[in-house]
Amino acid sequence: MNVTQTAAGTSCWSCNAATGGGHFCAACGKIQPLPRDANYFQFFGLPRKLVIEGSALEAKFHQLSWKLHPDNFVRAAEAERQLSLERSSQLNDAYRVLRDPVACVEYLLGLEGMRKEGAAKQQAPPELLEEVFELNESLDELRGARQSADQVEINTLRPRLQEAQKNFEGKLREVDADLAGAARDWDAAVDRGTNGNASNAERGKLLARMNDILNRRSYIRNLVSSVEQELAE
Amino acid sequence: MAYSDKVVEHYNHPRNVGSLDKKDPSVGTGLVGAPECGDVMKLQVKINPQTQVIEEAKFKTFGCGSAIASSSLATEWVKGKTVEEALSIKNTDIVRELSLPPVKIHCSVLAEDAIKAAINDWKSKQAAGVPAAEPTTAAAKQ
Image (tube, rainbow over all chains, first blue to last red; front, side, top):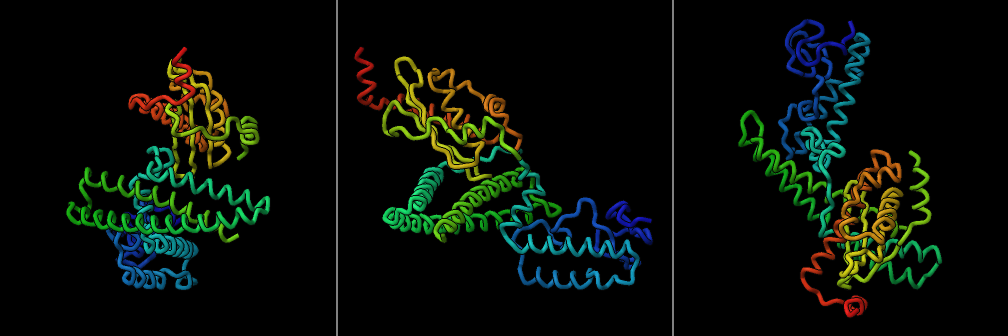
């Protein structure tokens, strides 16, 4: 029998006992395939909340990597070795996302269907555009000055860009603070809701808010890195 | 992914690159951006208040080839059109003309938004009754 083809997450492929989507069957101890609707929160046995305590997550990560490690399955059937690989790789992916607050929000929004391409028209924040445009112009001028080896022009542009870089790095910190605030609000809404779920209206509003913040963040993040790149040259 | 010939043509020879005087009351400025790719597009139109005809259009875009081509084409199309006609330009027209692939459709949306934003800016200037600058007063005297 091909283990990975089992109706995922319902009953054990080996002894048929209910598994509840856990890593191992509680009855026979066999490693289980990932449920079809597996997600990183579930993998770590966490609610869909965003403020995750780092040291607890790390401890859980070490515990799971030890349990799921392919070395434990060298003498097991091929199918079980495969499952151990699958779960170990999922573990690493999940840990990478959950320990990074920004990636975690992005992941949650994806789970909640908020980050699909073209799903919602993503508009850049208008108050930023003016500055973004000017910054791009300065970057353009700097490239031009470099090409024509115009040292005088380069020397006047560099401090302007360094100033802009500081300004945008400040904005990045602001946006991160906004995101942290929204994450706390989301968790509070989850706590208030039933079955660990925020009410639908509240949920939608918070997801939209986080989506906006993430858009703003990626915009600023890209700018900061292109300025960094230009200044490093 | 390869760009279509028309995109390449606009990218290599963009039409109407530059800027118009933002403070000129007959000039409308549209500044739009798409956060997913970091593109930012500025499109400006100079409109004759008597005839409502767009006499001049300029753009400057920081972004991918499709974004540059979309805005270049947009300035080409709006020139000589009335405000009404320009507002009826749809992003799908741009997609068709440039054969943009699905992943680049947002570039055409941006260009349509830029046209609308520029015209709206001009309209709000008109509504605010900003005193007309030299060239338009000359036209008004006729």
